[in-house]
Image 1 (spheres, rainbow, N blue to C red):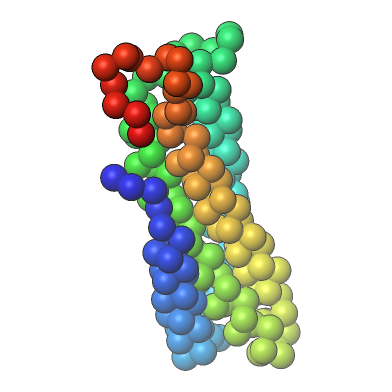
Image 2: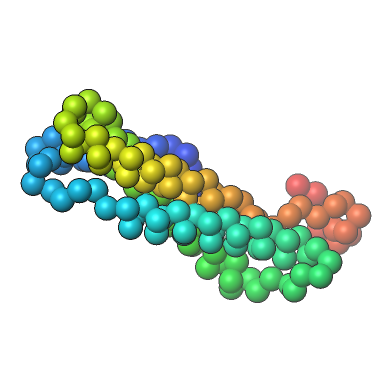
Length: 155
């Protein structure tokens, strides 16, 4: 499993933005107002993943006062981070498509939905950053040359 590629996230976000634009342009008015609960949920997940990144990095680096890290837990965090970065990119694209359309639409209902769309976009982008940070925190640090086994080949 390799690191998440930025191109994957960009393509997923652009596809979600196009879908959101098409959906909202065709069906706006028949939807209820844009809810805040998904935004709060996405932001909470971003905070939890950022905390996990800080905690995991310290444990992987074996900082004093930190328990050693469980390798299985790190593998689970990597899977969570990869899934969250992709989900965050999709949500960011969707909210960007909504926000873009709501900016163009000059109605009172659109103006009321715009803050929720912008907040959702910010929360989703924060989730992407936190997930990528968690993924990076799970990497094993390079060992200095003096700690290598004598028979181990040099990179």
